[in-house]
Image (cartoon, rainbow, N blue to C red; front, side, top):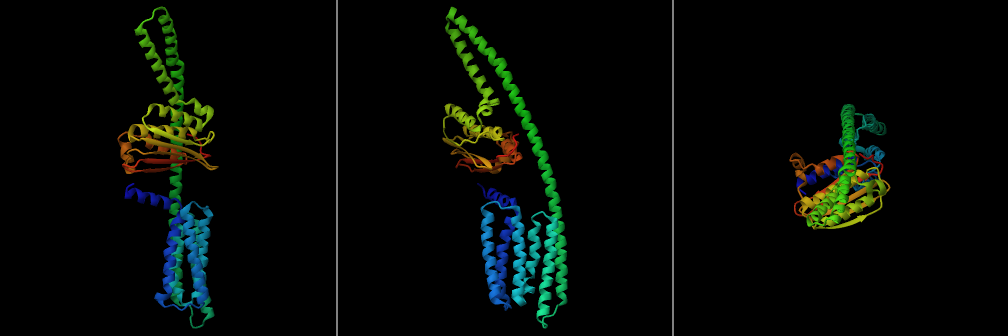
Length: 399
């Protein structure tokens, strides 16, 4: 995998859930707050409380970062973490005394972290709440200590915070509108892909039925007639014709099965995949190891079957592999297909160029999987083989 590909995968992983970006930004921000005391020589009003709050906040931030990086979290979890941010910062300001003004940048960063979540109304609420919280802390200190007062610059900062709330809300509104447009375009794309694939399936089924009921039956009938002739007049030439008819019939049956596999409709994905692996093992020069769990008949079984066939074909035609591993597994929420080969591999960054050159098999497969809401993890590099893992939700509608 090239450095560029690694960077793209990291960016894609972080951008999948905005809470990950907020969790990463929170840790260095807390580090800056920790450094505030020694550098600014601030004497907290309640040092024990301030230190305890800061320690708990830092520990919770690290734990939360580990949680969000290990897997997906509930949508409401991001808002809960942001609400804790607000409460923690306000508590730190109340216990810090003279550090309140120095903690101002933290107040500015809170609405920005929320803007990633594409909820304008909540962003506005948090932004205004942050500004009011900052002003409330100063009012508290001005009432507690007559020597502190309420400097005019506090109102200026309060105005800046309100402006930031409006700016982040506007930014969030733009992002939300654009996300809605992208979602609408993706929905149109999914419908177009669905209609295209359904048309292909109908065409393949009709063609398979035509070949089975027409040319194949004619061949079989011709072979029966040929058998009668051979019984009356044995001839080596007729034996050669009979062998050619048998081979042609065998090829036609294979084509009919590839166009519309009956075993898939009758017995389900696992049985169809096992039969496909068996057929490939008989005619290729590499070893195929299959570990296939029973997954029933998922809605996406046609696409997953096509995926196995395409990946085995790629391993045979392009990878020059000696060993191919096919695995099929299921959980209550998803079905996972993993195909690994020890072949030549390829640079995944060249996939777009391969499409431009007319090699659209794998790219078409990726588009269809994405359109059905599935995920594809493609790991390959020149000289170290290829691993493709496909995860399809169990409730995905088949294309």
